[in-house]
Image (cartoon, rainbow, N blue to C red):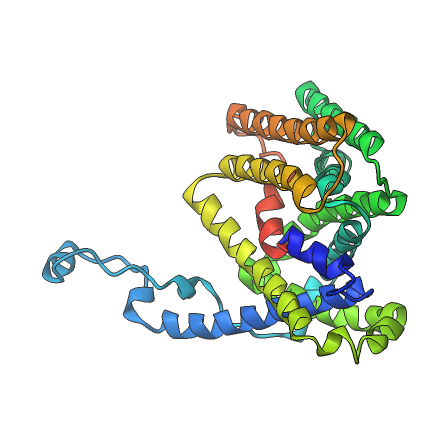
Length: 344
């Protein structure tokens, strides 16, 4: 997904100089897939196997075995757009647009091998907002993990030969918006009955509408200039459509992985994926590796992984009592964030 987006953002033979337009189209594809999945979900929910209702022992024996499993599409709700709900989702959509915009700008301006380092400060913002907005205390172990991540970020920036200041700033802003997206996701989920697929649909429809004036103002000339070029290329539109489909597919895989394993396993596999992705970038994209650059990558990923273990251990040590439970931290909403922002 990252490699394909990099091609769409910066390859001279395929891409156009309009990252907002590319992002807009991917939101269109995601919204269309949500609508189609919702239609399939409506049909699946009408089938007897879609019901999770209890079956008596006699019924089960008479049927000759366990009840049929529900259809995969039964998890997708009907895709309908209600203005009253869309207004409640709108603040999240503003943050969502900022998040995916700065993410793609970062990918456009930095090397793929440096991409994960440039966007590594998300957990720093998570802890900051958890402390300042939710009043959740920060343990010394957590601060040590954050210091390791910040050190890796500085180390990787120092070791990047093709360092881009604007790309790095875009990465920092992307990390900031990812963290804010977690907070607003938690706030607006009740508006869609806590259904992340319904939230994905509303979020992407709102984003499509929000991107139209941005694309018109900032990239109208670039899009018009490509009318007789890339916009007539089947390769360009195929790559754009596949990237949009991959974005939705990643959201599905995230849900299935967390359901089948745990958030910890998901974070560990994500860290391993980021390490492989960064190392392969040196070969695929011809990025020149430096000692500080490689150390920065693994320091950031190691600090992030250590942070995951620390947070999981802290959550296990919490013993429920008669006291009010502490407010959920920003990290606890990241599962829904990843589902609704899988383009990142």
